[in-house]
Image (cartoon, rainbow, N blue to C red; front, side, top):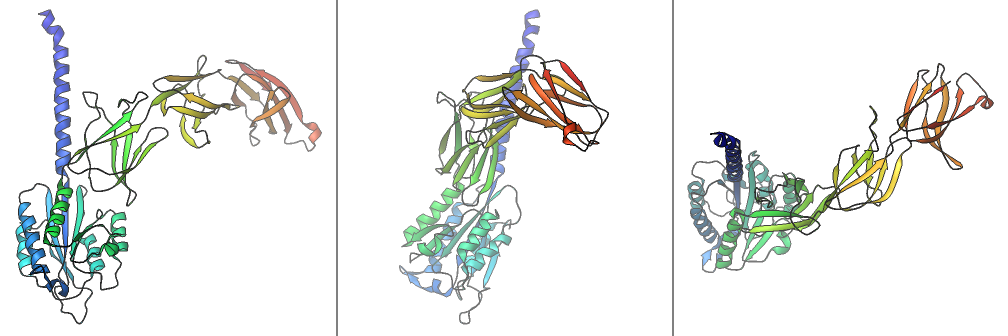
Length: 463
């Protein structure tokens, strides 16, 4: 009976661990499945789409193959579709550069059927306002905090309304409205005109058009995973618990903030992130470790490794810390760029390497080229300060200097607007006090006093 009671806490702990792991995995899956992909098709229905192409009108071909792709996506979870068409409502001439319309919006009932129905009743007529149509996409995507917004533009011609599709695309990406658009050019190669606006595919024939459309859909909807290995000094992925930022290179926007985690097996956990952007990964160690130009392979498990060997820096005192003594400690790289500010008796991790360290005692303690070794607690120990108490009943001008061999080094000044007592925590050593009463009007009335300050002792000077 006693043995059974003794095992109960262990059984309960195991149950909580297993349950917690299950709940975490379930929440991760729910989070991944909750993200919705919204695909806006922008279709060219200008007069040029009436042209024959391999025995079929280009618009009929685009309508047929787009409908076929939509049929294959029926029932796919967390995917929504919308359709914008341009050049179909007004005849040319005259030219109408406002001829663009959202024919089927997002969140419409049975979007696949509605898009297919609208496609059957659209006939090419007018001009080609590509940039204006893309600009309208900012209103087509209603606000959504957990959505990926994708644009697939299908066209057989260039801009005819003097719009700048490259500038519009750049603006929408920077505003976070859309990811980099996909553009399929029918017949002619328009790469020079559209490459700056998005990922361009040239469809020289019907097969290439179908392949491009299917490739884009597969790329957009594929399940892609990522594992980030933070390598220690032995090249093993054991470093963890730091914030990571995934930055979209095209827009410089932070798309994901995550705290790196090792799973219950001690392996970096699996991340689900959008495979479409090119990323810059910022691992917020001290200083940050950065990996540029990360491209993920769609539908695969990707691995990114970052060298992050870290050691702990601990600054303490040889003895007790006086109450109220909390000097800041400035950590800089070897070029004196400030990396962090820490405090006494609080260990902080840094990447292995050499650093310049300034402890803001009075006077400051400067240590240049201090080496932090990975997987170690690297300690710096300073002597505890003494206390210099200056008792005064008059207001004075003056300062305290540290005596070092034949030099005197400025440490601190006095409060010239107060006649009250002042207290200073000073590192052990010899000091010189130089002062003059505010009521004296000649330099010859300056007074010099030398004092010795000892650790954990109070030295009092009376004026």
